[in-house]
Image (cartoon, rainbow over all chains, first blue to last red; front, top):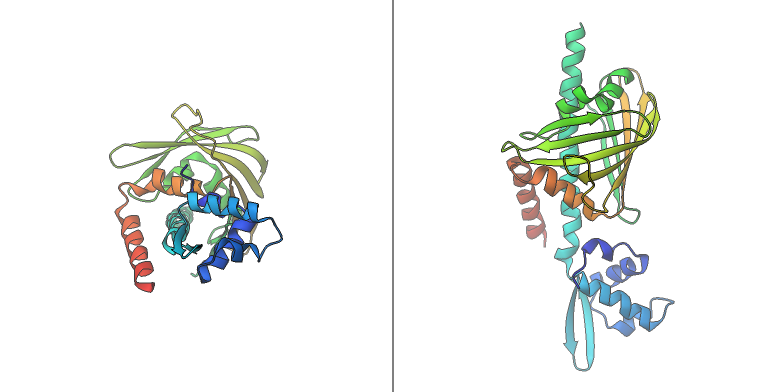
Length: 106
Length: 166
């Protein structure tokens, strides 16, 4: 199943996991130690993050390490930044319109 | 004149907060946000045009409008007015739709616009809550991405800074 990146950040535990693995690659057990929830639900969150295509998996011996795909996280910021630019441009057009109307009244 | 423009995103609550000052009195700014003939003049980034097919500005009323590309491709959207307090604020529920106002999908945003009069300046505060932040992506893609050379150039530049900052 393919999920949207926005589903990843919708949950507070998943956001916390993303912060952890952004710093260094970690095994599921090491991640679980940071939370007061079952190893099972950590696995579930990792599965969602993986389906969002946010995780790189590295096998080292018998352990699997997870790390964050930073470039995927930036997608959200890119769209939000585009949105900000669109709003900025709209407002500048409104400035111009307001200016024209005020001058016509004089 | 230096007019305030503040844009903040709270990803956790999927909310965008925008504050913007305008150099005009409240009556005029209120009309610019609520009257079809004025909205059409400023709501589309060039070279797109903004056309309003229906405007019924009252609680329970709706606004059916479209972004029109230079090639005349249209992207329709619907705003349903939930609450209106004249010269003070209004709240709408926004969705993407077809030309008859039939909603395309489950995505929506709630927009609350508040207006505050100052001396020669009106401050508009906009709060947009998205049911899913991916709507922002859809908004950008559907309304503006195609044909907006300037916006694309900005995106290219932004991508370049991301790549070089790595």
